[in-house]
Image 1 (spheres, rainbow, N blue to C red):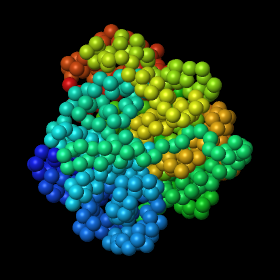
Image 2: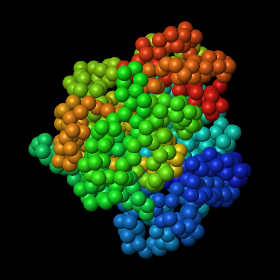
Image 3: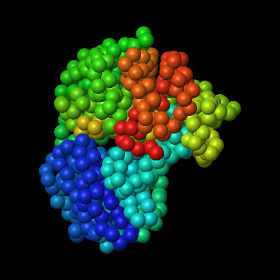
Image 4: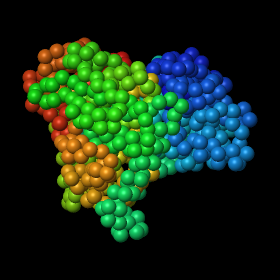
Length: 593
């Protein structure tokens, strides 16, 4: 796990070692164990390293193989690298390191861009072909590892975070109006390739981009989960799906134990993280370390779920760490949390993951986490209404879209409005794609391919890597997701959602963590904004930079300030926190003209 960056010139100039150093310095917290750069003429690669696999300097990056004429900067972890290495050795390849980076390099030489189809894991990488001058960019199937881009006719910048690209001081930092519409409407999700800034884009997940010497490029989407039944699936019963899923989960969890350092678990006390702990315990993992976090209550809403995480920790005898965050510390760390965001992310649990990661990183470098299960197995409240929906787009929009285009036009200033209802149009296009005939599957597909990538997955990456902590997400094992996509929607919707996963859990963990209300990282102070939190957001939204930018109509802001708790989105988020978080992020990074 690391941070990567690159500069590629198309105008005859040389890449700048100074710009690469500036980008890499911004990524230092992602890779605190070392760094390096390779600059050759028009192409320069930079790297910050977090030592997880092959702790020796033989695995340092950027990695150069002069015999093959390839240089790579890689971020992530390839869980099947030992098997792939043996396959490559049988083809005659020789290795000088024992890690996964060199395996990608050799695999690319052996199989070309199709090598990504052989990789089990999370990854973002840049490969430079010395002889052709081509540059290859790739991102894993769920975008677990980020890859931001800024391209003009003269040059291309690449980095693991958007703020790193800003360090070049050579980027259009104006706000993208389409992205702003998505942020305000599509629950703060800005789908790839967009970002909130006009001059920065992101490589979509499951995509390989081949960039020629002159800057021309082509993309290939190399994977997608086929939602819907396959031949023979009609004969499978509920118990069959449960058993298939249990075996697939065992494999996914086992894969993510590959490391040359200890691996722990972020234990919320929910069914997903509890199941990971249970499967690891069943597999004989001894001395497992687990971590939970809690916050103060607000407006009568409890701020922790320690009762459930304690139950699991005691049941399996883990080395458990509970972190309680008082309100004063929460506010003190909000600036650091926002600075760690590559893009504005409105979910309250960003600060929870940020502070949890700080504590965890004092003990270990790698954790498994339960993100992705709700989007893959139908755990959210908006999936049941989709069953048999006559108007799938309308039903989904009614549950997920934060506000209609008509309402948004009364909240955003006219100068910042997009041309039309671009967020609903995006949903319509996605729902119309081939496959996923069941309306529930249509919702699961857009959530798995879009929302999951640019909300929970990005949140976990940004907040853990802010402290040099690697988070692995077994529920996003692509073979597991391929199986889940075949499971009938009815099996997922049972037991108020995630029915088939809960049936697996009943074979592994105490039932008390299964038959309970759905939980999350509760941070009530950011949902029911009052006192010093209200002062903080009002100060930002009425500051000179905010007034100069003029994103929001004054009447709308005054309405929010007057009664913040009265304005909650369909997904139970604070409208005031949503607009304030955007403004605070823009001010933090000095962008958004």
